[in-house]
Structures are given as structure tokens and as C-alpha cells.
Length: 88
Image 1 (spheres, rainbow, N blue to C red):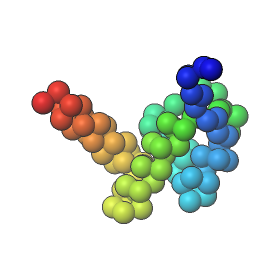
Image 2: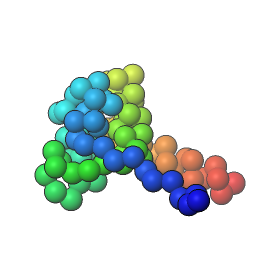
Image 3: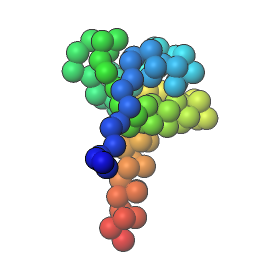
């Protein structure tokens, strides 16, 4: 039996539902390069990892009323803190 697990594949609409049905929010995350898209966002396929990022970004936005650009910066800083903790 193969132990390699496949990541889930999500549509744009799936990603939007994960962010409280806020398509403009998801589009702003894509514009800020928080979530990558190589084609028109509505045609892109996303992974569970992208959904986790989108949901984390949505919680930051919701809890702190942060803009998409501020959320992108906060996520970057949180990633750096986590990286420093792993090194230390």
C-alpha cells in the first residue's frame, strides 16, 4: 500500500466558503501573493495548504480588522517568528 497521502484539491468557490463567503477577500489575498494563482483565480485549483493560509488570514482580518496588505505582513512576520523558534 502506498503511504503517500494526496492533498485535497479545492476550487475558488471552496476557498471562498472557507473564508466566510468573502470572494473579494480571497481575491485580495491573491493580489497580495498570500495565495498563489498562475491563472485567473476562479479557474485555479487550490490545496488544503492554501485553505489553511486563507482561513488563518481570515481570522487575522476578522479579529483585528486588518487589511489584506496588513494581513500579508502579519502572516510573513508570524512565519519568521516560527522559523526562529525552530532554529533556537
